[in-house]
Image (cartoon, rainbow, N blue to C red; front, top):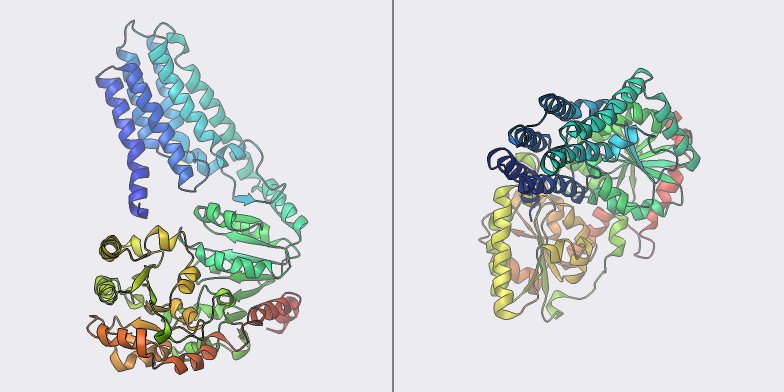
Length: 566
């Protein structure tokens, strides 16, 4: 299921069940059937929220469906026989609807200013914890369902109708009083608790991450290298949506800072010296303002895209780059950064890739990896080849090649790209059914295998302008890059890595000739060896991971000296 389809299902399932509950209760007066639909709606709301990796449901989640259920319950109670006590019905209705309508405001008032995983002693105390872990939402939702149960199951117990709603109101009132107190004191107690808990772990550095959900791969690729530094550290997130995925990927403490005050509490930890970043997220500016830290940009891959030479990098004290190509890229784009801020550390992740000395012409049945990028956030960063994906796949299948299709994780977010990708996958599915060739696509390529697994399983690659090209350069295997802007001879000047690749025209018209070179002649084999050092640094495979380790370890104890000299 695509990301958009999953989001639609998550929104529509509780809403559809709530509509059914309202109609059954208010119109059909089918009490037990209506109550069953109401229970299903509330259950679906909570479970789908958790399955989406968002933790406990917050107050205010799926408020409209629950208000619809409340209206159905009250309408059913008003029309049943024997007639209910009007005062009991009025109290139940006022309290129940008041509690539900108040939920969003109470959540903003009562929620903690941070979330923490693997930070002993930092967890919020009750009642704020009830708002953080979903218990408060569960209490109000159960109060709603119990009101319905009283209305349906005990027609004579009219005086009990307001009891569940009043119980839920008591919890909400407790949250409000606590939230007002914490707001008046500036959340000092909980923030001090966070600082003390983090200080006990004596972290030397932190990794800061801000990005849309689904971008956690940017963090995951660096966790192993950071672990190998043998310094305690923590991960700081700007968005709570990334917490489940990141926390599951590391054993380090993870903190979500939802306010500037929470970030202040983290940065009050005296042992912190260095902050690492993996992208140019706009919220990086929230952290680089702390001048007691040395700020280091790592990026999440090296490519010739203009965005990798962003002027935003001037914010950082150090920029760790894969090779000289990255440094030259800044100058080529008119971004002036002092040379002493750069450190060539290679791409330590690619050390896990198998390096081949084998010629493609000696491979009996070469496997081709097709790794298209996404359309980008802006028109000037769109290098996506999915508009010709079906042509690329058709040409490979016509030559009897086995294909691994692994698109960028964001590819399915754009409806047109998702449709283009689907057509290419259908071609692979039909060919596998007809020939038995073990093509891989979808979850088989993007979930069961890592990107590096796909690279190791291939003998050649077709990609777009992206960091995938630079990483594949390490393997020594041949690759082709799509020229989706039709730059022709200028393509290699705009994107120098193309000198080591075979260029595919924007319409795919030259694919037959390109595939002849890619899968047989491979005249660029020597050029790839030359450019590998330029793009990925100079070290033998056995010492390659130490480029990053050496620079990072020097930086940690020297952070204060670097800051005072800047």
